[in-house]
Image (cartoon, rainbow, N blue to C red):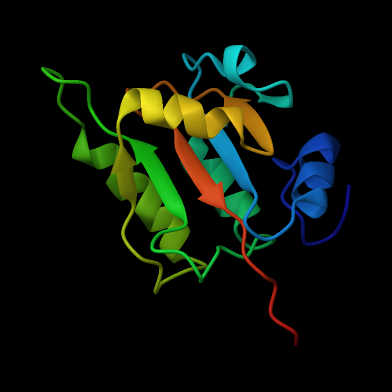
Length: 144
């Protein structure tokens, strides 16, 4: 256990976050997402909701300030509807450390899958919300 790091961050996840460079992406996937089908670097965070994981990761992780949006979620498939509470819950967690972040971008389901193929890693969570997946793009940590 380390001081100042959430116990929700496993040693493997901490190592992945540290190894990521600016512009790399990490997918926080819901429990139904086919992560193993799209990426070989899959970590498990079973039982953990994505909002909780966002609160744990974002104090350690700089979002990319040089892109239109460093946050990407899957758009609803035609005929489906998004539950706005899912995004609201994530934004509440995100705004704790990133109050000025740009709005979340929504991309089509298969475009999201393609993005997942090139992601640095996929974290499979215990999230059960429909369309609960989110991609975070890492930025440059500012010099203090």
